[in-house]
Length: 420
Ligand SMILES: *Cc1c(COP(=O)(O)O)cnc(C)c1O
Image (cartoon, rainbow, N blue to C red; front, side):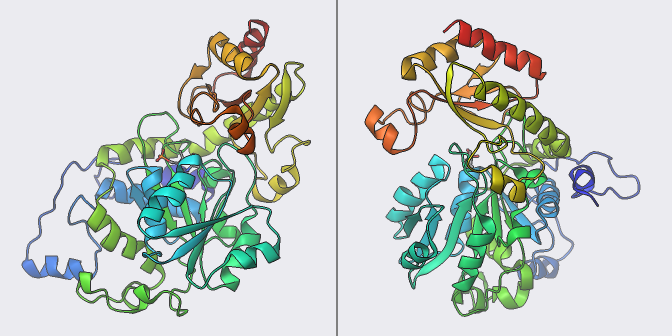
């Protein structure tokens, strides 16, 4: 099946007489004919037992997303943050470290630098364009994984997935990639060597700003028996002595995440959330095409506008990441643009307040065009000097282009420039 078809058809295939649309299975539990059947399920969890870590509606969505990413299996979580957290905790214990590039979503940076540190897990950050020598220096004997973000939020630089996959594999550790902004419609990191893919499904996958969620996809390709990951090759006493790599083969990573972490932490989405996410996924391929088209037109308009100092959007030929976009994002660079307005902080807020259609909101990848001012919102605690150090201009606006007609989007920007 082609990707467009998978969006519509994967995950749920009704049998004779069953509902045509994915049903919401609103039940915390399941009933079985014998005690032995349930005992067998503890050995091989092929059916849902309890809603803290499995549900048939969520299961269908997990299968669809795994198929879209070209992975072997997936597990949904109640938020993107939970997906990033569990993807790391599945490999790192206290005393371990991970290597992450510095251009990541702000919430991920805080999770890795502040919260994981409290658990005794150290994150070493490297420049995404660091030399081989610098990368080698950053790696330590206890480094368990490498983490990057395909199209960074909000910096909009493109992560060189293939290069970092080769680097990670040379050290016998996996590469985890946050693929939230491109979605599998625009980029499938597993094709470039990524081992695990995570998403905030809250963004384009849901697409309608309805409910939060996340997902972890296992490529099924990493060799957990290489000697670096004893938790996969030695019995798990908390799960009646299971050896994940032996019992679960190429889906050992996702089963371990489900049976250890989801079982114990319980950040599983509700069936109703998965139903809504599935609606978003059904139209994902169609929507991404329009987001890309609208965003490129808006980026071109902004780059020629006298009120604008600079525009970041890899789809622009003048963008420093344009060359790399041809490899990783050949069908388009998604819907988010960052631009710096002339007149700094004051003009930026005036411009935002003058917008008549675009929504001022703390979100991105909404179906509606929306704007956010990092300096007074997500990065509010920083002074103007600290903002510069973080690469954020006080006049920077993050524009998430929606699915309205491009003429209406540009007309709104035009009148807001004139009235600010
Ligand atoms: C929003 C976002 C997250 C966090 O997702 P939530 O669903 O808000 O928890 C992680 N990564 C990226 C790239 C994001 O944009």
